[in-house]
Length: 404
Ligand SMILES: Cc1cc2nc3c(=O)[nH]c(=O)nc-3n(C[C@H](O)[C@H](O)[C@H](O)COP(=O)(O)OP(=O)(O)OC[C@H]3O[C@@H](n4cnc5c(N)ncnc54)[C@H](O)[C@@H]3O)c2cc1C
Image (tube, rainbow, N blue to C red):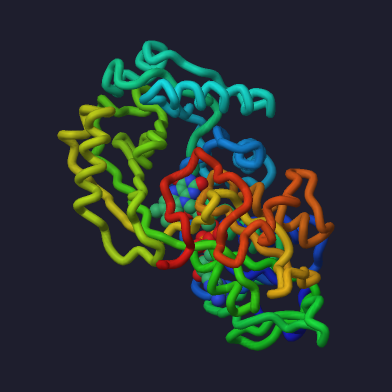
């Protein structure tokens, strides 16, 4: 409910999983008045349309740490909040299909183990005995993390919406963020303009998922983040793909992953040739092509009908890494009090940690969860190229954030 005062201790733009959990962390840290400004309704962006894959097996130390922190959060959620996001630990296999992939996969496992992740390399025979639904002998072995799993994205929206309301965060749904109010020298924030009027605050967090670049434009901040089509489908149920016969699998080279869902198989895919831009419809030819690959690896799916298919716009960054840091002016100096947060297309697996780091940055300027000094907007040049190596364990998103 709207109060008469238009001053907040923090304003969070965007009511997706990043903005939602961030606002909740800010409130739990002791801020009295936290306001979420959401153009539509909570979760109406990517967060309610995701596949829910939760993976700590990242290709960089940042990805592994964000994944492990988020998984721990999901596991402790019902204890902490009384309502969880539906996390199920299922075990996630990332098979290799060439000797080169075996070598990089084994090196990755060593890096992940050093960071404390429970992960190992399975031979193909070991994986086959774990996953009888998979075509036997179809790969050369793979990395396997038993603690990886999935959440139910709709339930996650319900969980953070409930947490926000019960902890007294003020929701401004159907309210659009229009821009920042800055001090006369432009060096710090005084508040935000919204479609329902201004809110004064010296602390603002900008999120926006696939629309984060447009949110940035309104704030006068160039944000190198994009949106592109991503597709998910769910097959009809079949005993051969019951959860005890089917783990989660990511075929990285093909941009294909799957997990159990209501007795069937949920599979998602990203087309490497997909241009940036919002998803408008299902790409059936690509769906057909990827179903061919799915049936090679999971033969039973070749005969299964689909009962749900959707295309939605997924957020991404060109290096597949999150954006966590201060908003920057065109001259590269920070706007005091404004933090930018994006999970770069990994908001289910990294969301809680990204949200917590964003809250920490807004409160303290640093975070004990992760050293994010390299993950800010300053890593991108004027062409939108990152100076960091991309995380290799990611869907094949476009390398640029706009059509060139
Ligand atoms: C089909 C699909 C499958 C996916 N599968 C997975 C998966 O399996 N695992 C995984 O980790 N990730 C997955 N993702 C990615 C994940 O969903 C996103 O990374 C995550 O939801 C991003 O959260 P967000 O809060 O940043 O963005 P969003 O959920 O998009 O929220 C941003 C919010 O900002 C609001 N907004 C925009 N502009 C304004 C404005 N001017 N004023 C006010 N509000 C504004 C929007 O309305 C929106 O509600 C998937 C995404 C898609 C689309």
